[in-house]
Image (cartoon, rainbow, N blue to C red; front, side, top):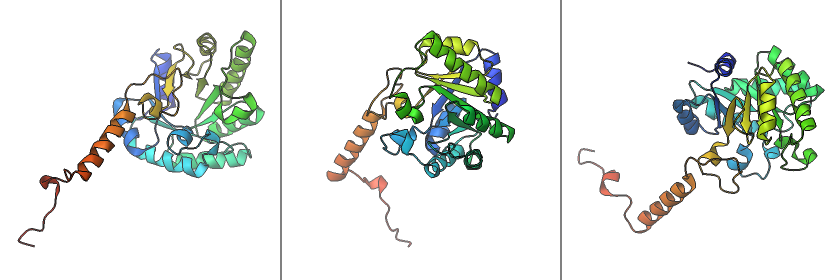
Length: 270
């Protein structure tokens, strides 16, 4: 059965944790869907792990749409959330609506937007009224990395936590159906979660959030440029891929590939 906003709300009300993973291609999305992941996020983290950019700010709307479409085609049950990339929603409300609409047409069932101010609240409200669910994102917001001073933990004090909670409540009132909390102390994330009606999805925010999200290339041990402290690696695809490629190269150079069973011959009847 297709996961919807109502499904996510029921998971929270039933006290069940919500599972979220990023995906950027058809096959990975298909496997995550079969595994029972609730939400598959086409994150702008693809800028780093799939495209090799040094910042998520560099991925374009056009690139996000290509990856969102690929993921959506592999998914039957999970909710697909498309990350709105840097400057795709910052120019005008009208442009934000247009780009979010493109995400939905590509196959997303919702979009994710970072930050909170009067302008973003207006966008969230307009998108929700237009039938496009919005996942909000507070705490460490990578698209604002230059203005917040780098990779810094947010909400370390009581006053800072209250500021985040106030923003979260405003996003909730504007219509956001869920909220990602990134790089926030566990105690702060717990306090925020307990004072919201919508579910929170933690990434580096401890165990008390309504659910968890990880970048799949981190979780699978595929991306090795850097590994955040909060990541648990459930596989080591880097070594598997390296060893497979080395074995292939060796077999080709030594004439072991292809073998007879892997060769096509012209039959005598042709």
